[in-house]
Length: 293
Image (cartoon, rainbow, N blue to C red; front, side, top):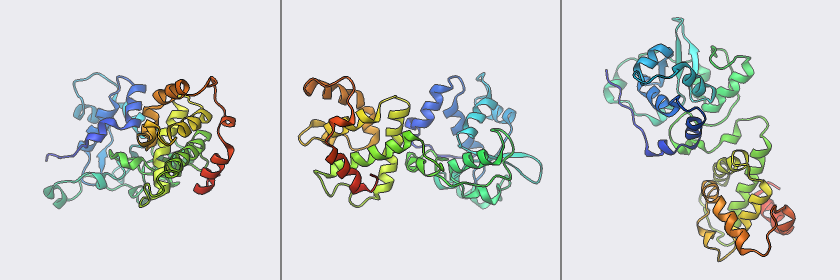
């Protein structure tokens, strides 16, 4: 029976998957991940066997399928489990939320066994923490792991990236800085437009923006102190960029342009701008209002 699956345009701009693709060239991470959806039954379960999967997904391209599967599993895009029939299966979390099997497929019994109850509602990064605390290594049986709690990234929907910081017991320094800068960006905009996103959940907005700002710090190696100055400059009333920088993603995309223009249009900007160049009272006010000071 054919399995019809959907793919959204946003999938091709999924930042983390694109980064995995760039970091693992020749492993076809994105295509294999999409291919796994076609191998899933209606519950998001697929038979885990790298030889079988290689024959079904990109059979005529020469690459190491087992390595690609390990990359996706390690990053939490699926979890692996053993069933009573002693076979290994993979389970894509939230598959049923973002894929819509046909009526005929829904009407027949599941092709594969369901995973353990602990995995059924486990969002993506919980599998990473369960794996880490169970003493297992990537690629081993995780049947007895316990979830730690985190976020949903097991889908292709970019909206599922909103809460990546919630799952780790102790956020990294870059994550902490990103949350503060994301809060600053939101409150700097509200300083001029008080009702901006007033109907939205502020914490979800901050967490979503922080994902890109954290990458600006960790991957792009931009110092938080300078990012902070760029935000203040971009959010100066009358600045062209004021209404164009309304998310962490946009801040990261335009950062080099923003920083270059800020240097050009300010008097003798130092090569490295520290927090001392930002009015202390303004920083404390923004952070105090957001409760993150």
